[in-house]
Image 1 (tube, helix red, strand yellow):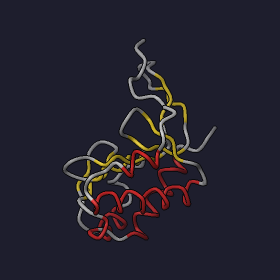
Image 2: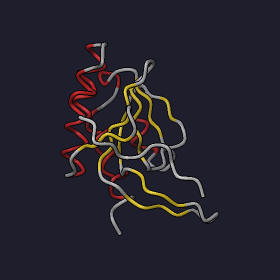
Image 3: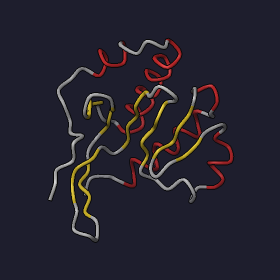
Length: 136
């Protein structure tokens, strides 16, 4: 079984975020950092060289594949801010309707800038995601 390439590293989260050239993206990332820290009660860690993750959980698929991943996290990308939330975006329809301007992928929420979304709704999505991957 192959090992995931993205693993926790000892790199500095603050140094990584301070290296973001786009001032608005950098400010948004620090806001999400504090929001995720507050909601999860966890300290952030770098996963690989570009993802900030909070907490950790072990997963195992029916196929037998298993590994460790962060409970919630985010990554500043060139086109958007990517939030990794392990909570289905189709289930809380009422929340998603109130969230604002966003796109979704498998377990990712993409926002261009935080001012496009309701931060209280985002807080609830982060909370639900963290709870869905709580330590066993």
